[in-house]
Length: 108
Length: 113
Image (cartoon, chains in turn purple, green):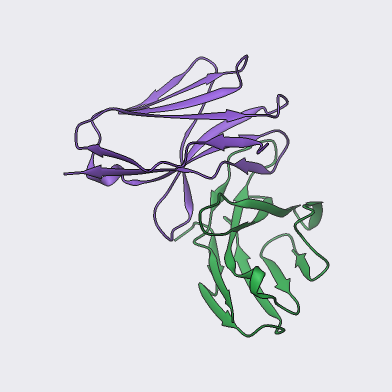
């Protein structure tokens, strides 16, 4: 079983739609959680950290459920520029452990 | 640009050749990480340094791979006797001790023919 699992997609959604991505992790010792965004052939860029209390940054909301070992990302009012791969990331000690990513295409 | 930089951005080599990549981290960051990413996969951890000390190596880092950070600033990753399976994007990231937040460089894309 992979340590971090995500639905690879692709998710094809129209502009303005709300889309949610889910992720599960197997290492209960994981302490820190993130969502990274990666555009095609570019490096991953930190989108947001994920906290147990949930956190919101503009159109993006992240949630963590430690009991279920589950992380989510909600994107509201999708823009064309949101098209990318979204990587779910956990850290138990120092190296980051990445999921394979979920590909999102926002269509006009 | 004060972000993480990597050189070269692209490298094409023949099987059996040695290659070396360089990473310059964000200047105030004392941790430096190397990851490898292949198509359709997320980045996979290879090794990391705190200052000049190499603190952890993944089992992915075979004996053909070696990394150094001699002065605690830039780092090099060398692959000896390259194989076609080494073709990947090699990503460097930097961060601060006691923080899990890491910032990635643009990567070096290696193609082994």
